Image (cartoon, rainbow, N blue to C red; front, side):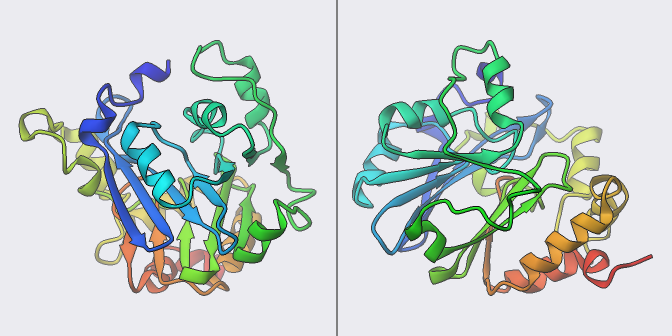
Length: 274
């Protein structure tokens, strides 16, 4: 149930921070499997048209609503960037009924079958599939500001976006950047989770530090093994974009030099390692 996946006091623990004047990160604590502190993050982007796009929506707290108003209040796009990051879509859709919902194939059906009262049955205006991913149009203003890639070879059906004006890459589970320091920075020290053996092991292969060998192995031998050719194609297309910042859902934002980090993490896929 969603109640087990989200903070009970989001206003107290959320970090709302401008990455650029047009890009705002909403960072929250989150435990994977109830044990591993990977954090969660939503992102608000103000398009050059003035419209707002919200990626991986998190709790719509009074503070978040105030930030939305500060950015102009015109929420036009709500994006679930994979089949996992969608819990708060209904809350935002109710508050901003003119917004278009965007997500990957399988997510609308998943939500229709979910009995959790927090998961609504709102229709999606745009659904990415392998067949349409090169022709999809989200909206004229959105298309003008963003590059986007559907990584259908990823088990979570990842959507990755580049906000071109500020050179910011926004993604969900394509790559982590643990540990989740900012996302737990407002949690009282006594309440912060202690890293057990499982958590330490998980963090060790979800970090971009050093040579990132653990993450390279995880992506190569686990995440991409089902369709490595398709995965490599998506990674190469993302690498062709011009970005300097990466905003992941889990772990630290990479501000400055992000392209080099991306190329390090996905080196084997970019080189087509055999």
